[in-house]
Image (cartoon, rainbow over all chains, first blue to last red; front, side, top):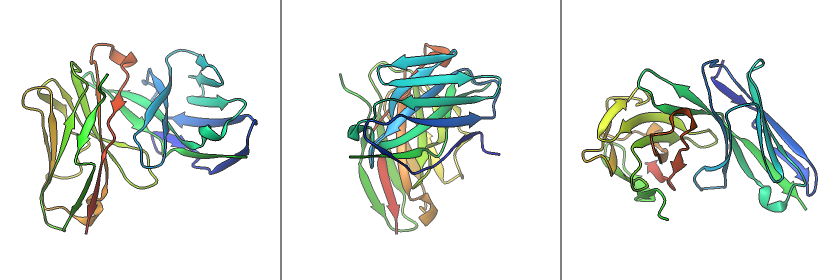
Length: 113
Length: 116
């Protein structure tokens, strides 16, 4: 089983709709969780961080379920500009103290006019 | 302010050539990470520096891969005798290194390496 798993999609969603992605992780020691957005041929850019139960920023809501070891991302009132790949990332603490990230494969989202 | 920068942005190498990829982290960032992203996949961890010390190189796929950060700022990832399977985007990320698990990693634009 991969450490971080995401549904690769693609998700094709009409403009204005609500869309949700899930991401499961296997390392129960992980303490921080991130959603990154990656546009085609660009670098990942941080969208949201989640350290406790959840986080909300405008149209975006991230939820963490530690018992079931998954995080979710909800996008409300989707815009054409939301079309991108959404990467789930989980920190992997090690004896070195670094917080290297383990990423899922990403979920491709296309918003349809 | 200036973000993470990487050079070159694109590199084409013939199989067997050596390549060197450069990363300039955000000024003052203690932690520096290298990741490899294959087409259609998420980034995969290669190695980690805290200042000039390479604390974790567990993700380097073979001894052909070597990274350094001699003065604790700029880092270079070197790949010797490149193979076709090395073709990927190499991403550098930096963080303050002071926030523990709340540290945010900021990514550079990446170097797209194509090995022919």
